[in-house]
Image (cartoon, rainbow, N blue to C red; front, side, top):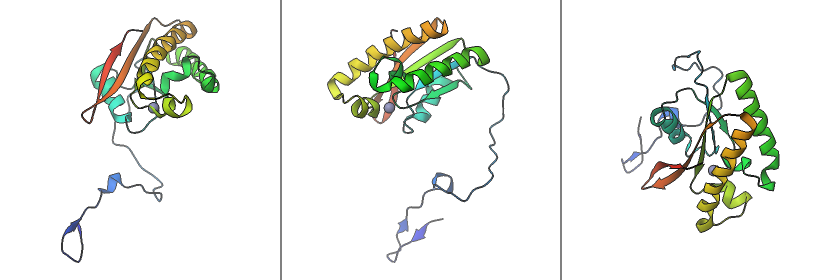
Amino acid sequence: MALRTSEHRPLEVAPAAARPRSDLRVYESTVPYEQSRIRAAAIYCSDGRVGEQFDDFLQQGLGLPRYDRVALPGGPACLAGHPQAHLEEQGVVDELHFLVEVHGLKRVVLIAHESCAFYSSRLDLKDRRLELVQRADLVRAAAVVRRVTGIDTVEGFFARLVNGRIRFEGVEV
Ligand SMILES: [Zn+2]
């Protein structure tokens, strides 16, 4: 429904589904539930601006529907040995152990993304150095994942913003 101003020009109204609401008590998703596990997990940044693109890449690009999500600020940065992320590192290592033991995890995907606020704010790194550190962190994080889980299949990707879209580039880890 379009509201009209006194000048009779349509006023933009966001679709109902896109508007935040706080009065909802019950909601049933129409997405069917699938019991089987895919035995893959992704560790990535919790930044909601790239969440749907991460889903698209993992589900459509890598063919991993229903992958387990380990999302936290900076994603794999917490496994790269930065003292500023020590608490998060212990939490993620514990979660990886759980996923291996209970979910039968066999494959881990690590994603770093351009303009990640964890790096600029928590680690105080600026643009030019930032991507180099993020790439080195993917290598370090992959080594930690292999060491603590015993899983060999660990992959790294850098998510780059290109003309308003997110492009996922493989990083040798
Ligand atoms: Zn981020």
